[in-house]
Image (cartoon, rainbow, N blue to C red; front, side, top):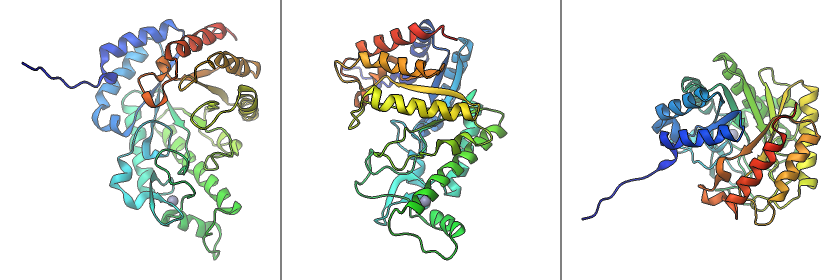
Amino acid sequence: MELGISYFGNRIMRHFRRDLEDIRARHFTYVVHTFSENDQVFYKQTMAEMVQATKDAGLTAWVDPWGVGRVFGGEAFSNFTGLNPDSVQVANDGIITHCACPNAPKFREFMAKWIADAKEIGGEILFWDEPHFYMPSWLGGRPGTWACTCPHCRARWDERHPGKPFPNELTEELSEAREDWLFDFLRFLTDETAKVGLPSAICLLPTSSDHPEAASNWEKAAALPNVSVIGTDPYWCFSHVHRTVEDFVRPQTEKLMKVAREHNLHAQMWLQGFKIPAGREPELQAAVDVFIENGCRDIAVWGFDSCQHISWIRPDNPEKTWATVCDALARVKDLE
Ligand SMILES: [Zn+2]
């Protein structure tokens, strides 16, 4: 006799309720719920129940377009890109990428529907996480290429520089245009979010020569009319990024806090709680100290239980990482 059963436990309510108690006991005041394209199709009502449980526990429910269109951060794939080859980014080698194009009208329509669904499941704040153009150095990228050269981007270029041919290289002018297109996409998202009566939080990728596809002129995001929170996530020892708290977390924190102050926005800093190499756990406390020293009073950690269920980003020592994160945050929880 064999008795088989399928198992995929991370959306099981009785597990979530137990984790939620743990989250509350550790003094967290809000939960950022990942709401991927997969969740949107197959787990929508489940997500609504999780969001409601979060609110019932007295915590604020944020909703995050995790990996949606592969334009946002997250360990999730996109279905949109497979279904809409006319709306994906095209690299300079003429081959399509696995990322939707922020300039494609169909992708904007898709995001408007995602926003409506995030509202429907009860989200209280929508979290625009790490918006970026195609990253050749990231999962699924082709090293040495760049995007986007799709017809939608070419049309936007023609509007911007009438009569000037679309560059064959990623020139400074094209990089500037691309960054402005990303902010234009953020404007669309935050305006749509405001239309459904919700506030927007934006988390910008840290400025880094590793990722020129990310926006570096953060003040342009901060100046958008419907943004309430601005943040960044300077993960300093992830993958090929091996920096220190002092040479990476500190300058990115200083930059974020300055932009937030100048635009009178609530500032949020993300603490790396995943993929921490063995022996470097004490740096978590050092990073929290940097956030606090710079005046930040909203620190979020990615993610619960140090993401040990995601083997791809599991820390070398998950228990020690999670305990260090929780200790570091418990020390600052009552600061005004
Ligand atoms: Zn494009």
